[in-house]
Length: 194
Image (cartoon, rainbow, N blue to C red; front, side):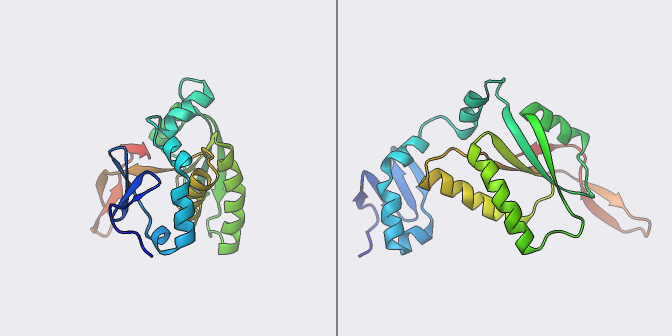
């Protein structure tokens, strides 16, 4: 039997696709409501969810762990071997992290099997909690799988894992090609690490 909206469940109230707790709304993934045993197990983890709802963010917890002016201890950069960091990106990384390690992606890319192997080794780094993964060259499969793994560690195992972060830039610049065609390219400045 499906629960009706606003019916209390272990101190929480369900409202559509959200959980309402302490005047805050949290998204409820639709697959939890369709798979009854997993949904009930998720809802019964009241203490884990309350722990996540404290005012301290994951970033604050990392600052406490590192004890070095708020820097996270280590970052693993995932970058295509043909790409290089821009000066602004380098300064952001130096400001945010004590140690940088680079994982170069071959110019020809990885097969799905290779990406699974890489993801398994990166998952171990995330589980330690003192390492972030920074994608300079995003790889959709890895971003998806590692994002899922962080959710698994957080909700199922109550671990505070490292983060998956990406460089982002809203700015675009016009560039004229030799044939006279004008294209838009990402600007060299205005980068953010999100």
